[in-house]
Image 1 (spheres, rainbow, N blue to C red):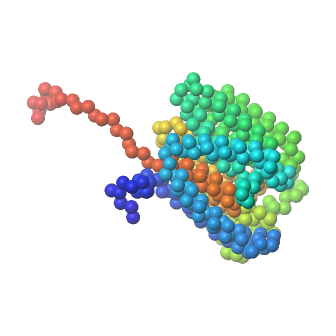
Image 2: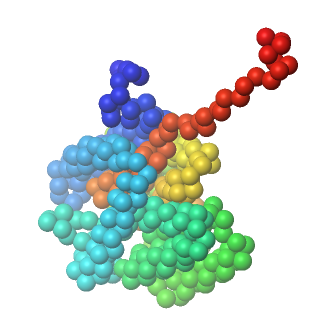
Image 3: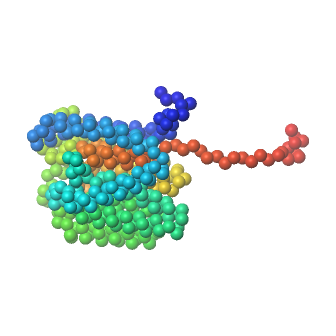
Length: 384
């Protein structure tokens, strides 16, 4: 146990960190490993790999991810901004390279091979983008002559252009929704809300008309016709699991569900461990978002308030999209469940993102204004 009298950096970190946040993140990572044991062996065997190939890799990914999250949580606000700026610059360069040298999968270029490792730069771009936009909103609020809001809009336009060029419409909507929520928290005028809402609706319509795969997914979602195999199997898994599941290793739908270890791990959780575990997962994600918004609301520093709000909103939106697709409340979209789905890039990027949250929500010493000494009045002196 770390003593309160210990003034070392580790002791200071332990007594200032939000341990409820830390526990929630570690629980989600632990559930990710458990569900990897349940979901991934069938996928590995289906593609000719050893049964525990993905399990082993998930554990190997998780250990450095925990170290990264804790390491980032030691940073102060200025260091968080500097790291985010470096990440943003690096991710933008890699995203441009991806358009020319990335792997093409189903008509999209989203992955880049670096020293034999597959990396999805857009995953690292998201938390860095949120932090830098928070800083730009803060600078505009502090000094209105600084065009921080304009720079944030230009940065948003650049990132949307790169995402659409891949194309990755799901990440585009995620980034746009998070940015809009942050701008609203930063005091967006109602005129801007109307303008940006109109532009968003126009962009969605343009995406529907310009990208056949987007139109196909939306049509399948609305009509239920066409290739809805994965979503149908996901619903079947949840129905078979019932409230308490079929038991660890007893699931059968996962054996024919292609992405059961990644995009549809929530369905495997439902089949083997029941709706109860799905509700626990939902509660953990909701806890992180609500606690983050409450912590941000109590912050005096605008940068911290905007950054924490944006990071937990990003976390929440991504969770909602994944779970919504699994239960057929949203059109099919490949997006990981934070900390739970298989994948090194997603896990490391989310560890950095939540490391930022831990760093920015650490308790700060209270700044108390010194009380000036006032000599007692004549009446007080007589009373004494």
